[in-house]
Image (cartoon, rainbow, N blue to C red; front, side, top):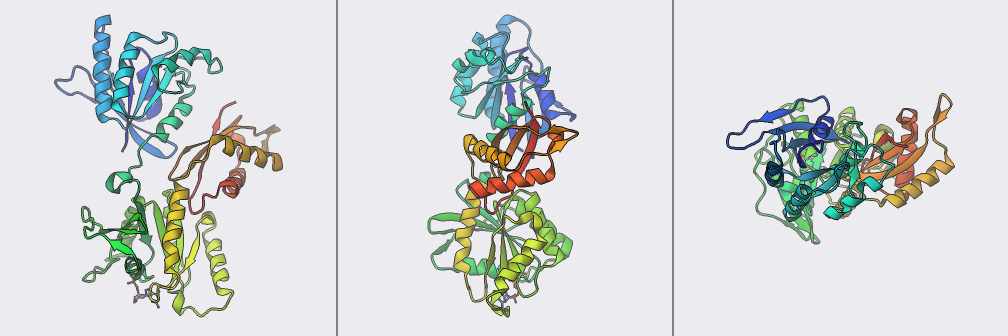
Length: 435
Ligand code: GDP
């Protein structure tokens, strides 16, 4: 779980924000001997991302001369532990020497820092926060802990800086691919066929750090790793012992992947279990590709492919974004098309759309098809912004989230896809109040 630390001098309101971020959950007080102060730990989540929050200044030391010492200590702890640092200052007090001190230390840390200006009770009055630009951390975000204002905006920016947990193991440049599907659809044949392709360089060192066998490889300068699921390679016949077990392994593989290949047996067609597995990839926010295998033994004419695609669309209504590929692991027919599609959907999964372009598209969409009404009130969309990638997360700021309708979210999703693509990836849309 990534760690967010809240740093700032005493009385800027760190614990109020800490409590708002962890919500109803319990904070854990860490009482470390030898440390002059306690740290508060809590678990929070925002827009589907879970994280730990640390309030490094749980207990404050009294007295002016102690302030500098205590913030210095806090900043050190935060720099050491945190993935993202929320640097909190006080709008009413302005920039103080202690703030400058913390800023200096955070600068050297080279970790993402988000500057939050607390006690801004009127967010419209931006002049309260201008002077904090001088701290050198870009746009300060005005919040009010006691009124609960601006916290959402702050957290949007914070989670945008959270590291992708998947990148820790293999690095950002490596596309992590999970191959999932029922037993006998041809997963292991498919993997072997990909690895056996021309110009594929398979690394000797297969990752055997955990219970799965990962295979790193490279083709045309792009690095990949195939995340194994149980029994896939069948080295010495490792069979899936029970259905339940294999589904669990598949779920684990999906969680570690960027792109999921949902393998379907072209000869047998789609069954309920396929739906279940694909649904999990969707829920987990991964990019997906339907790979229809064993196409060599399917009796077909010029309409068969189209008909099969239609069947997939009917069965997986929620995943119309996923491309469909027809291959044969046995004859390697059309297999060379697979990796380029993997690269494409991985890119779309990590794509960030500039805010002004997103707002242009949404304004056009609103002009064509006005938002829904409820009890005589119409939904008004004020602003749209993308706050995260993998999967893309878009926040829609509206006058009243209650009026937003699922079908209108779907409509916006379609318009956004028509404009930008996002092929192969789910998009998360969050509606939030802001006038
Ligand atoms: P897994 O359980 O999903 O890993 O499936 P396997 O890769 O072990 O394949 C199951 C069976 O299907 C094996 O007998 C393979 O030889 C066969 N098979 C796999 N892919 C193809 C294909 O594209 N065409 C044909 N005709 N048979 C295939």
